[in-house]
Length: 220
Image 1: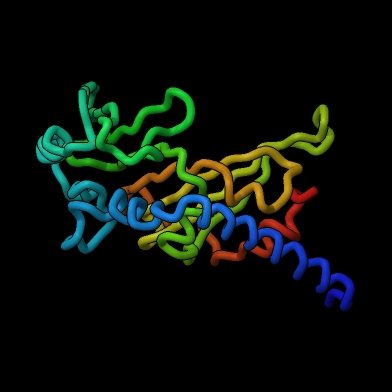
Image 2 (image 1 turned 90 degrees about the vertical axis):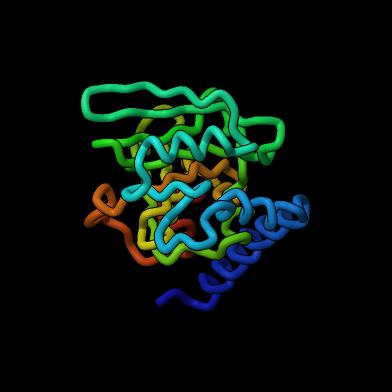
């Protein structure tokens, strides 16, 4: 069991991390309603993970394409067909939330297998801290550090997966270790919705932010 000094250090770090999150929220006061609309519009009656009226595992590709074509946030959807699977990608219109435009050239897309949507990937520039404040902490997740500390500079890749909605909506963030714990709150979030069959037996743990970010080998 950690001593009093150790507990004080952890408490101080927690305060710093949560202060950083609150700073992000105050800096973007309108993001909460925008985030909730981005995730929920068109899905008010859905009984499973859903985005823009499209439910992975249930919505047929033809119906999904029609929804994309009539969505004011989306323009120029394109379909690529393969053997047994198809994918659709699109550009965001000027009406879309600014954070819908993810970093880099990665585009939003959906994939279908057997004519039914299997997953939807939404790269965003939305800071993870804002997203969690908008929809709450995830019930489950996973934190992993990849690479060796003996590598040049000791830099390694860290992956944090926040699992919502029966672990079928995954919010992914990536950053470099070693890093301060507050880094997690500021990195862009990639949101992916999956069908139940794709996420069957997914290895997620109970959400444990303190252990992952303060006791893990990542913090500096």
